[in-house]
Length: 459
Image (cartoon, rainbow, N blue to C red):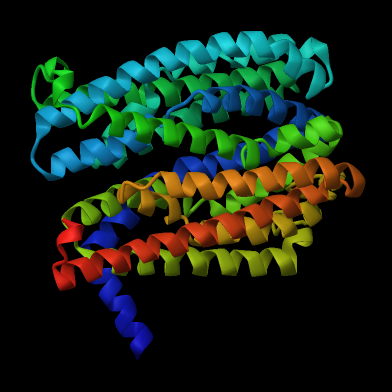
């Protein structure tokens, strides 16, 4: 009865319904992307799939290294300004964020041009892939202010617009990849397909945000003076800390395929990328919660509504944790049969999701489930501290855990094999997420105590 009553209360919870609804808008395109990854793996084989992962990862990570994650800044400062009914201040935040992101995108492409030969030689271990890196690098220019635009759409609650852009991108990319699959095209055709999709997902949010901004912030919003911005030191500190945080994530979390390619070869990178692709299926329904929950967390922290905040965190944690546990149990029991075995449905055709040559990815998948399961369940850990204006703590935790992970990788991975890279990544997630969650909950307790006791030091 308690469980039934709890579910009934959740269904009636307006905020939770809004978060779930917004997340569902982003789910369909993620599902299509997951299927495309399977089709691509079957088309290219393990080694080719590894090369594709290295090329895309190399370009994306160069961009991340120079990104100041303007989406986070916009969600926090534009969200706060809108909550306080200060549209001109919000406009100044958006204007500054767009300018900074556009400049850094140009710089990022220049850096990519310089690093492409090294990436082809030392990570892909094939100098002839340098043109592929340069080609996909054009996506950096197409994403010149995408982070800012995405932040605007999140703050203004236009998740359906994002979902439509994602869906169009997914359908276009799917059409191109299916054509490549049918015609037995090679790596170049697949890379172009993903490049076209990346350009759509880059330019789409920019166009939609420019449509909505005058309607939300008023005509002539771009004329808002920079003097309306929050303290420059505060803004710069937030942006730099999120850049460092992004850099740490690049090294510790988002470069796994690159690390495996560096230590071994594209073949092992292909196994690892396959495991990550399957993991994405596990976290796929929860991933949209990250972008849709952050604005709500920011609003409730700004308003000091701690009971509602605790309830929201408890609800999304229960949803994410239940899904993660169920899927993890299913993969542990039936993963090899479902993913790598040929089976014949009623209509008589033999279906196999991944060929048997991909089977070495399975042990990696089981190891990664531990770390990604933890991060998936407690996905709100960093957004909570960002909402409290404390980007430094996640940065500090992430830095030291990243440093330990990388140091251990150079020592252990060449000795024990690429599965050790998965062990280190899972340990990184469990330790860093656990510490950040503990600090976030401590901030909530501190704020509640300040409000309850009306302590002057909390003002």
